[in-house]
Image 1 (spheres, rainbow, N blue to C red):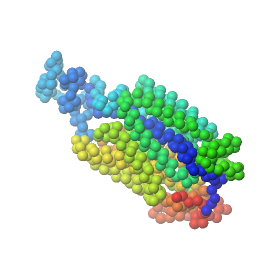
Image 2: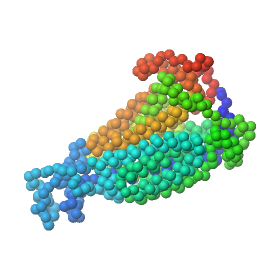
Image 3: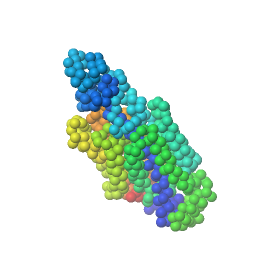
Image 4: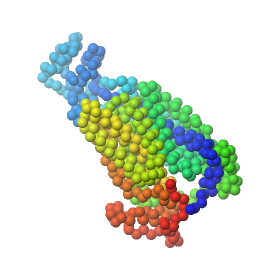
Length: 578
């Protein structure tokens, strides 16, 4: 079994009892709580309550403003949604009731009307404000013909995450994880706070993009920092811990949103809460791994001494001198090229990216739809967070017992089944109380299982690809996930025409993702791949089925690209993945 690198041995020595190590990892992963506030806050900020056309001749009289009375007389029934229309009304001539607007007069006039013309909502909209006192959707009437603006506002945020991840990763490599976190904290707070004072939806769309762009460097560098200060044995569970913090953030957000029912007040509360959380990250010392990679040995030695002292570990000067993080320029520049030129790695890269995209589509689709579920939106959202935390923590022993592939296949299959069952329950109609409750339960299970899938694929991705191409694989997988999250709001919008369609879409894609993941090699107990040639041989050995090779146009014989490589997977002597 290959010895640990000098840097890994250095981390093992200075980690000692691990108390300070765990503290640093916890602080670095606190950004996941902030991420849950920002990534999913649109459930409340852009909340869409039940709505219908505003009928001035009725709504202006409190004695006649009973919603059931208005709907039964003035609002057409929509067979596609199995509910009253949100965007149409009967336009009766009630002039005979002028000065005498009573229920009896209105009923008599409408029942005896020879014509029942249907028109759009000419006088605006009436909203049920029992859950949201004022959301951006109700303030700017982002319904009916303007519904796309609400969807665009959500998608613009996830688009900002794409660009923020790219810039944040490069900035963190060049200027250091902690410095980038500091700068991004200030920018995130400023842009998030400014969002609460926007004057129209178009400015809010831009501001949400900026918030995501400024925050993503914190998320990227926070997770990288946690990896760089933790021992090799502790690293595999970081993804699960991050997801657990994300679920905890969802629970906290439900409480904040319940207290502040106006979206502007909630946006301010989220900004302040995030600032408090992010201030804790300012306590982090610089990453010793990054310092060594930039040849800042004196500062790295100081940080290592500090960690050794607080962990009650040991600092070995000889190990420190041997430790360095070196990047082979040729490998880093051709990483994407090598991954794409080799058929098996190309198939693995594209398939893995597809699984990430599907998982993100299903997760954010189910989560952002929380406001449309039956029951109290705040209770549903908080309960979903509880499910997430529980399922994510269960994924840690599940990965160990069942393996990476089986865990991914299983959790995605659960997501698919829950979405299909939701489709069946929705088709039974909103009037069926049992069916409505079943939709909520299935949504919770689907949300939790996709969260568990994320925890698994974080680890599996790192083990499927060789060292020179691992960062590239993670980067492309993250990009694919962001594409899924961008598409999720547009998929949800379909429910306003066909309520059963979004869960059917999510379930179908999740089923495909589960089948695709079933083709992946199992990496539990397998040796870590360190070169492209090793990965070639490993993938060829796994994908030896004629059906798979023919179906995906994979060559049957793949030879190592370098003639001097005499490598056999069976003889690989490196540290296995447990």
